[in-house]
Length: 351
Ligand SMILES: Nc1ncnc2c1ncn2[C@@H]1O[C@H](COP(=O)(O)OP(=O)(O)OP(=O)(O)O)[C@@H](O)[C@H]1O
Image (cartoon, rainbow, N blue to C red; front, side):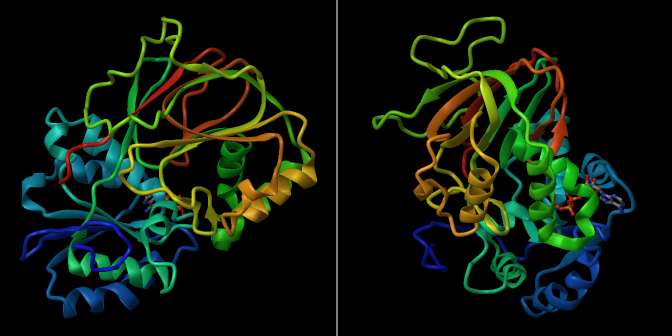
C-alpha cells in the first residue's frame, strides 16, 4: 500500500497491535514526555492502538528493557526520543540477542523527541508537523523495510547502523554540540560555528566499492562484500587518492538532522550507502555555505570542488590521525590510530 502517495510501499502491522513506547524525558529540549501525552496519546487512543508506556530513567534503561522483554509479546517497539535511544535499542535488539535475525523483524517506530531526529525526518511528511506525521504512521501501523549497514570496528566488534557513520567535522559537531541539546535543533548550527573556528584536517585512508548500474539490492545478512580487515581492499574498489580530509560521512537515509537534507533522493531500503567527503583546503566560508545549503538539499549544486559524493555498496575508513571522533548513528564509537571501518549494506528481509 502507498497511503501517503510517496511511491513507497508500506505493509501494515496486524491488528490489534500491541506497542511498547519508550520515552526518554531528557531527550531534546526535555519535552518528549509532554509532547507524547499532549499529541500522540490521544491519537493512539482514538485509533484504538493499545500501548504500554515506559519512561526511561537512565542511560541504557531502554537497552535493559529490551533485553528482558519477550519480544514475541509485542508487535512494535516505538521510541520517542532522538536517534540515540533508537541506536541503544537496535544494538540490544540486534547484536546481543542470539536470535537477532528474528529480532530484527520486529517493527521499530520513531517519534521525534530529540534534537536531531534524523530518522524521523527522513520518514515523516514534510508538509505536516513531523511529530503528527510520525504519530499518524504509527496509528495506521505502516511499516517499511529499512537498510541496515554492518560495521566492523578495529576491535572486531560488529555494529548495525541505521543512519550514518561520520568522521571529522560532522562527528565532532555532533558530539561537541550535545551540551547544547536543550536548545533543540539549532544545536548543530551552534556546534558548526564553534567547530569552524577551530577547523582541522584529519588524516586517513578511504576506499569504497562503487555502485554499478547493474547492481541489485544486497539482501543478505552475511558480510560477503567485506574483505577481512587485515586484507587489502579488492581491485574492484576505488582507493581515494587524498589522505587529508575535513570530513567523511556515510549516510543511508535522507536526513542527517531535521533541517539537514543530506541526500534528497534517498529511500529507506534502496540498498545504498551515500558517501560524502570533503578534502582539506576548503575555506571556512565555503564549508559553512555547504551546511547552509544542505538545509534545502542544495549542497551538491554549490559546485564546491572539495566536496565529493559517491553511491557505494561498502567502504573502509582507516584514520591515521591519532585523535578524533567517529560516530555511528550520531553516537561515539571506539577510535584508534589504525582502526578499520568496513561497511556493507544489508537489507534485512521485509518485516
Ligand atoms: N532518563 C534518562 N536520563 C538520562 N539519559 C537518558 C535517559 N533515558 C535515555 N537516556 C540517554 O540519553 C541519550 C540521548 O538520547 P537521544 O539521542 O535519544 O536524544 P537527543 O540527543 O536529545 O536527540 P538526537 O540524537 O536526535 O540529537 C541516549 O544515549 C540515552 O541512552
